[in-house]
Amino acid sequence: VLRKPAVLPVFGLLAAGEFVGDKLPMTPSRLAPGPLIGRLAIGAAAGAAVAAEAGRSVGIPAALGGAGAGLGSFAGYRFRSVMGRVTGLPDLVPALLEDVLAVVLGVAAVWRRRAR
Image (tube, rainbow, N blue to C red; front, side, top):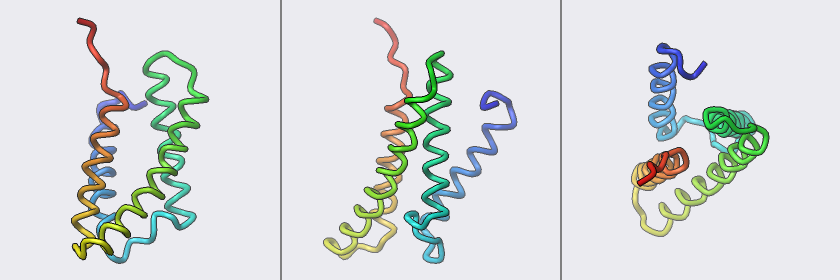
């Protein structure tokens, strides 16, 4: 399903919406039950998709993807809270730093190393 031509733009728009929406003051906490369950489900689906693409069993990778999403949700919330309090910077600065870290870790998780 993820290889279909129409899927990439849809997921790109969803990701862009999440990046923007996460910065808005009216957005509910990522730790509220609804958003947290959504993050856990997306993390599990991502873990399963990466495993399936590699021709591997999806159970453990799905569980790890969900766990990573949960850990990232709590760690990101804590990071933004502490950074804002310690530095006095507006929330947008630690939020953008958090986004950069999430993208770097995500790319590192799926990057295929070429044999030399």
